[in-house]
Length: 232
Ligand SMILES: Cc1cc2nc3c(=O)[nH]c(=O)nc-3n(C[C@H](O)[C@H](O)[C@H](O)COP(=O)(O)OP(=O)(O)OC[C@H]3O[C@@H](n4cnc5c(N)ncnc54)[C@H](O)[C@@H]3O)c2cc1C
Image (cartoon, rainbow, N blue to C red; front, side, top):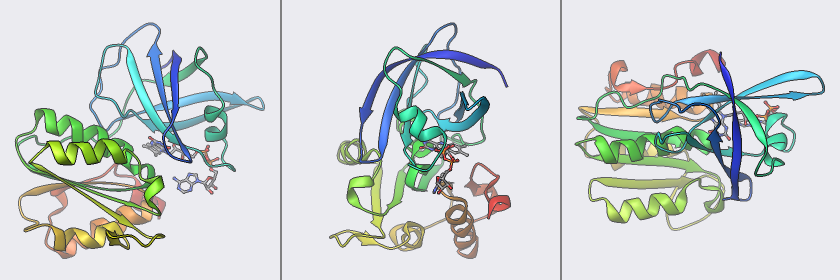
């Protein structure tokens, strides 16, 4: 992997546990597909630590943005959450299997937690370059931890071809409850001819794939990072 240095230019706390980070690359610009990720590298106690993070912006010159959830007992996230604008940090060139496969097919994005990061990037890419309908299903524990909530609600009102759907597991509210993937068949008129993009914790990705296959969706219409079944 080739790494290069980027300068942290801005940090914003967007949910109680998530910060958005903006970076400027020092020497080059990245040519990536929305949905792909970079890898953060830093030294901790003399050891090299590496963690993948997904760009949430559409490709733009020498800038990129990440949304990172802090795990207090984690290694990389408490470190990155303490960084300040002006600091230089190493990142690998973008890679990864998640990207829009066909801009002429209707798309269904299904995510939980920080699995929203590639979905949000791909959704905006599709709204700009795609020709069909888009459906965005996202599952969270509570309302306040929904990533990109305001941005998604705005897109939902602005874009006739988009439907946004949230489901919560740990809070009573007027919307849907329970595992988000279980709502997909009932919320869509038909599962035919659409492409399904899934990202979240491995168990959720695998269960969603199984559910879609049981409903008759062929494997080639289900798009994931691809490593999740080995992690369950
Ligand atoms: C392709 C890819 C893209 C990713 N993109 C993003 C992104 O855009 N934003 C983002 O915030 N994260 C993203 N991640 C997750 C990220 O790479 C790290 O795994 C995460 O930030 C935790 O790192 P850590 O070093 O703080 O925790 P670690 O030291 O690795 O883990 C410590 C503890 O934290 C908890 N934990 C860690 N990760 C998870 C998890 N995913 N779900 C539940 N509990 C967990 C567990 O209790 C674990 O024991 C991505 C992962 C992959 C594979």
